[in-house]
Image (cartoon, rainbow, N blue to C red; front, side):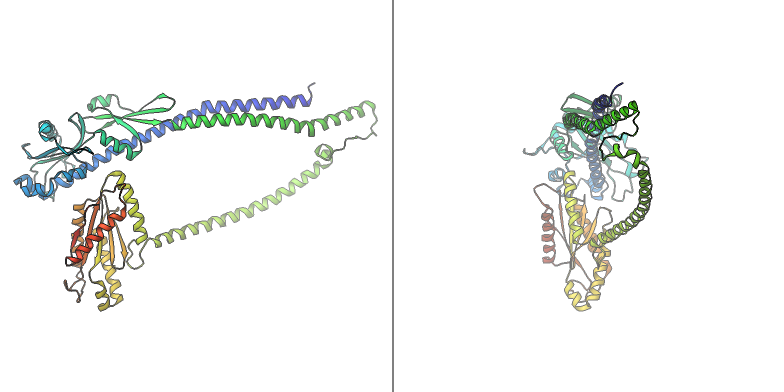
Length: 550
């Protein structure tokens, strides 16, 4: 018969080996597989971010084409080719600001009204490549015209995608030229495009924080045959993911991303350390457990067993056990029933305590919900101006910083209108502070009626000054909105007898626009608007002045 000591030793060794084997199997079968899955998920997400960035570029190009093609000035230019339109709008800086280097205005017979192919390479002089590529560009336009259906609504009459020019893929959008009202027939076509060159790829790579490259432009059919997301692991340190980017009938290109295998490398290193530490801890725990059990359990049991065998063999039942023990071995029989009674009593006490804890927990949850509601209401109040109901300076500063960062990464413009009520002190002095408060509220309502997009913000800047924040809005559109706001406030016809300008209340507006850059802060944009507002006051008030683009 095997002793308890030998059985205990074997059990501890088997337990240690089993745990070590289990950890190894989990690491090789589950953890490593999970790391690979996480890498693939991260690769899919990063590749999708690259594809989404190209989608944003195409949406931006199409938005610009839509804005220009449905403009009465462009329509008039397509009819009479007036030089004033060219001088006012068609200069290289405009298209460089839009990130557009391929531009073509043609009439319905595909005769060129005005066309340019630019090279805006950074650090190099601007180059006009029109003569070298105009014929190729016109051939592409001729191919695109039949794909713009005249049977769909005007907003859906366009064609966009990719084509090859100068051995580089060009992302483009093309629309008919119509009146601003979109009523009537078209009298030409407008195409805008952006060359996807290494400089643009490098900029996108920085914006999405993913190292990638694009393949050559191939046909839609070729890409469709090989469609799908592919992952390769050329070595332990690098993961390569590729996916087709399809755009339009002309096809697309393969986007290949290069991602470091940080998850697997760091995970494998950590797991090796954990397994080593686990084995050492298990070994130490086994030795300590063996020693403790032998000293406090095996040895007393062996002594008790020896005495029981001696008493049984001699038949001397009067002989007492000489074992002196204050632990469970010496008190097991006498204390077992007492232990059961104690356990039952403790169970009842724990049940009562658990009931009390559940009630207290429910009360705490209710209190926490009330605090959350109160915090939400407090946050809402902290961002609103009590008098006008507009956003206050705190909310404005937060959104300014947020829009500056987001639009900077997207390369999109940010515009602000800085508005000041003309001669408001005289208004307050003549009509009283109550009328002045009513006036501020009416002006606030007028401004909110003009800034209608969800992304726009109207905020009280201080006193009688307000700011309208217009993300993703270029300078011309901001000026147009400012003039509209100027007229809306005049149409309110708020009486102001002491105004030397008119006998109604007017405002002065300073406009400033910028594409956020790393080396500028949002303060520079506000300062530009403030200077423009100052000029509006100096030039007679009740007008709009445009600040220099930051």
